[in-house]
Length: 606
Image (tube, rainbow, N blue to C red; front, side, top):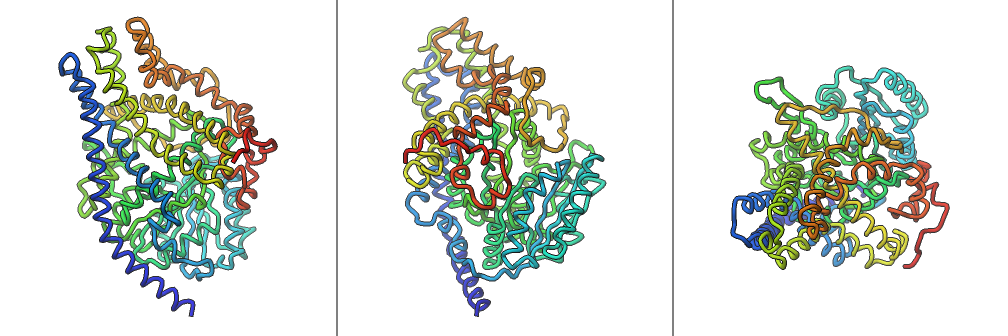
């Protein structure tokens, strides 16, 4: 009876998917009209603001650079507006963008053979096992342990870590040998990095399994979340990739706490909004997701790139390419925008964050060679272009800062530089677009009593929102300069290595901060000094782009202080719902941020 019911559910999902595929064209048309209208209106406002004194070469250059920065902000604004409407006016926002999620039940059988793939490279094995064992215990307790097989796929090339890895993973296999199958394999040659690691798994063991769950070394995914995603894949055979929403693990790093608080607010509206119009052509972020192995093996081989006659290179940011190839093969790629499906650890310091960020930058900038691949859907091409523009926009912002400083130094008459009314309106509009996903998330929290309490109450949540806004305005220009320098280096064949991430809290010494952030400091202080000497009245405006870089060194040091991070966890700075009511799965990890919750929050008002 149960299997017949599941077949009926699957047929219902297929019918709904056909209807959804037809409506997706209308949804994409709505998004496109909204996107283009806002782009056009923003450029018109910028041109209007630049009209005093005529429209010269500097004005045209500024307008061009502003146009380069716009797509990422406009897309975020559109997704946030759509996502907010769905969050506030639909009883089940997840089912609204993924109907199959609302049709599965907790007693549906799990029949698919599923591999759980954990990719490792120069990581501490004890920390990985800490994140794995609660998941293994949950899978075993569910009664479906025999349906899952954990594969520990290592690219570790550090001899000491490799020895420790082998010892720890051998003990793990021995502890679980009679409950859940576990295999460990370490590659000596790291061809293709993570994508090559998974490709080798597919060639050796992929035919044994129907599905594969992908995890990163910093991933934590509860068994219930894995089983839920597998059930959705079972009832919709056209699903090729199902991506779960990922949120940050509670941390005692001040840098990570504030970052993931902002990410938590922004991701909910952005992901729901984008899922509404992208529909069956959604994203893949490389981990905390489920793949259907047969089409993945057949269609998602990452192409090698040849650069100027040099040796072929592997793509670093493989995930979105695999999503595009899966959709080109006719399978659906969707996201489940639920915040209880998995967590990840965020870098504890600015310097560690920048190192990871530049690896993403290098990978995304390889996408332009793939835009002409045959059979790609238009939405997939849009996603690849937007991923590149996320980083190309950085030198455009720095170019705007340089043009602003030049204009202010050349003339002390504001009326000859920018119309005050249009200029103030443009600045306000840019800030609204920039923060739109987080503003939408904040309103969603404040309008829901249960959500407010989970974040520590309305007063504390508001304080944290303001802190995060200041933090973002300091952080983003620092990253823009980092991206700009790196992109210039790519013109001279600069490369970046793929090393293990330092995940534990640690202080950043002054020497190390200066070594990594002197370009930001120089740019910031040169811009501020020139403006202060010539047009001090304009200093507040220039601070938006130059203030963060000017304080990059102390910002990196202070946000990395372990003692300050522990204090922030105790008093609720960057407080996450998991610190108010900790899920049982997270309790098993014994996270310091949760153990630090020994004091009441700053405000407990509902």
